[in-house]
Length: 271
Image 1 (cartoon, rainbow, N blue to C red):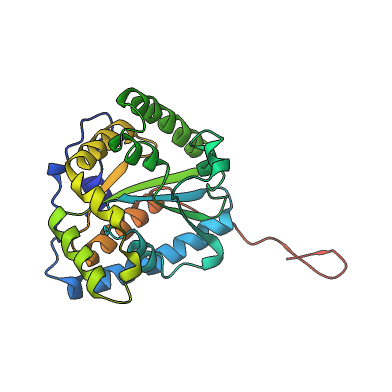
Image 2: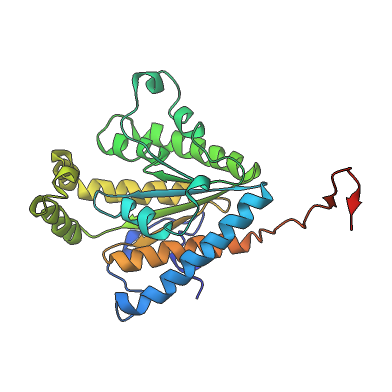
């Protein structure tokens, strides 16, 4: 099944999140049935990472966006669990520092883009600068449209220079978010994750969904398409992201280089 295609936001089309069901199960009866598929994808990602590193021509940037509790941390933990940590860099973009505010909003993002051979993960990303700031009226709709264009140009530049951009919006329902927020309050090990600001964003749910639809529709491009990942079921979220990654990387056909000729101690080539 071409999961990447099924979940892709069609470039050039209006995006309506109602097209996707946040509680979808991908045709699996439950998490137990999907375990083997996820394990196989994790193993395949490790192989593809090895090829990517050895090839040293391209990099991968996985962009994870979603409302609070949608599972960005969990996705990183479970989907990338089989990768060599030496070749993976994960960044979270919170409030910009004073130094970052003295530059354009993409400055700090470009500085953290993955090098050749690496897999980079943005846990929240440059899309905060067209989502949160728009909902909270820090920027106008006209400025947001200008930023959509700038982001498209930025991502095109990355892809033209060898970065494979994989963008996933973790789509959680409002009801499931409520359940998870309550779980954070009840679990002492998760209390630290709860912030009062989560409730403020929850009150603006409709505004956020419209902002996401606008951003996804404007910035899902042939070179860097968006994928809407149903995220109410954690196991399905992990499986879907892993399938999108595997299918995207396999389509790039990374190849291991042939072995270099061996030399003896005198520098003579050994056949």
